[in-house]
Length: 387
Image 1 (cartoon, helix red, strand yellow):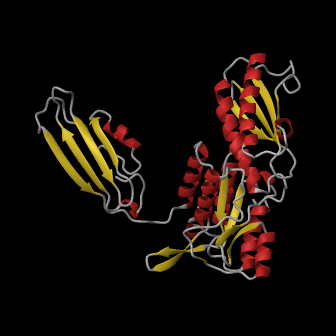
Image 2: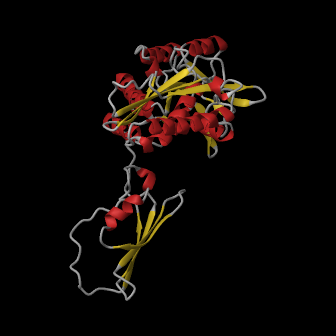
């Protein structure tokens, strides 16, 4: 069976080759999986014992046993082959519960740096849609290492409706929560054979951000970047309406003469200067990920002067790399960041199972210092707190 429901797997082919035991070893099974438009997967020489568990490494299929294995020693063919074609999958709109499960899964994964739900506005509407967006942001905010890129629900056709919807999110008043999200609008028109189809902007914007990460680094803003693989806007707003949307906190996609489609904004939904800009938020995300990699191996070390020195050296190395890449301000490293892990934030009366390290960094554009607080505790691992 396919790893998830839907028509996406229809037409996929699975080739299974069985080889009986020989002098070389016990019986084995080879599996090759070919999905339309996707790279094939090959699993050669799998032993029969635990075959279903070994195939969990496939992105496309799962093996579900339908009965006990045959008894050992039973005579059978030397080899057999099966060529299977997947069919019968049907697309159905994900439910509210399915989206909630997906949000929970992504929150538990360390890899995502960018998160989007481009079809959410089609599958859910009204209060269910808004509640799901807020649930996503509440799952993202504690990690301090990822950004949610949101789309305006397609049912909202007027500027007033769009502004009201953004206002319903901003009504939470939580700058840290709103600093995890950026809204890009309007949708885009993309080639689809001989026709054009309308798609949410988030997918293309994520592609732009990922491209800029590789070209310039995560601390650069996605604003003023050219969008590729799209040919037009689904809606062209006159300038007064663009101003209203911009004032509401929406990052616009604009079509400019001579340059084509461009991302025209790099702000989160937060009104707080400390969490307003995507470039600053993604700098924090980059540093948090790097700091975790440097500090996590030290969680169970004995709280001592040697541990503090090791931690300060590891974090200073991370911050020096960011400074040399141009992510931090100042002519010298001491103007760009500081790391404090001494008796001032670890007094003698503190629980010896906890170690506190405070980091301050100055982004490359004028802004107050960003402050991060690390707490290493043998009872709760590594915790990063944004001050």
